[in-house]
Length: 425
Image (cartoon, rainbow, N blue to C red; front, side):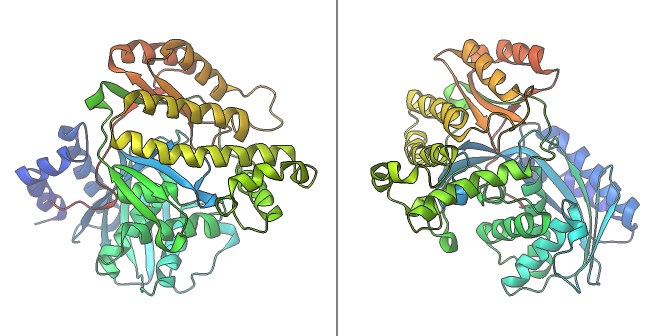
């Protein structure tokens, strides 16, 4: 029996339907989608193969804008939009991955050193994750995989982190005996993105994709990151979670993203520390006069954002645990204002036209008043905002935002309780 027929039988079983219902708001569409992924695998790599199915979700950042790289606190949540893959070991030291609509990425594992020409490509992430797991004492080997994705590029749902965690999950099953924790998979992904792909980042995105659900994260000790899952559901409290993609490209913004941790670290260095989490806030305020002139004013403002955002993340964790909706909305909105005014990542430096994020925040504030909340989502400068919208206002909110930013720009997000891993059917 060929692979498609075997998988088709399993997808028709009741256990498969229950599994999809636990991961997707549109569970009935998933059997066909996974079957198409298997057919893509067969077309790329042949019929006579055994294969396993994998899924890795995207994520939304609930609070903690640019706190993770300063060993701060953050809250993020996995979403039901994801990447799915069919994969199989190939008995070699070569990884071959085909993403739907793209050419094959081929990575030889005999040499896991970073390659300059691969920077910014899927091959860099594949090689980097394999190298990250090698650093943990494992021995990754070759596999073939076909990937289909529901994650729209540039929409702020962290497709790169989802891809990294997908690779890590495949390697974990085939070559690590399933022994990797979500934190280890996330750490391998961050290593790949920072050291191989060429984009400086913290650990929040990867950890959210690997963990699933609402997750409160504390990065004070990077060797033992603290993760606490929260059972909060926006829908149960009459709220819809929307992502609004405002347009604008993340291309050529790496230097602006990198400037945020660099400037925060310049403030920390004034106090003899590597990151701001290790600087007492009262000491920062006491010596701000000395600090000014030693670092830029923008660096000081970004440090203020960090101290306040770090405390907001801790406060929001408790508010979510207590289902304190007014407090949740207030903290959510305060985070958005801080990113815009202090962190200053609402638009790119040197661009006199791009103000999409600020416009989306202003329009959301006008529409929602005190009944909802909104904030800059993710790295900033371009891309998306996140909004908590009362269900009674959801249709009007979507219509108004799409009238400004285009059809399909406003997307409702649903929380997925399970992180990246094999789909057991």
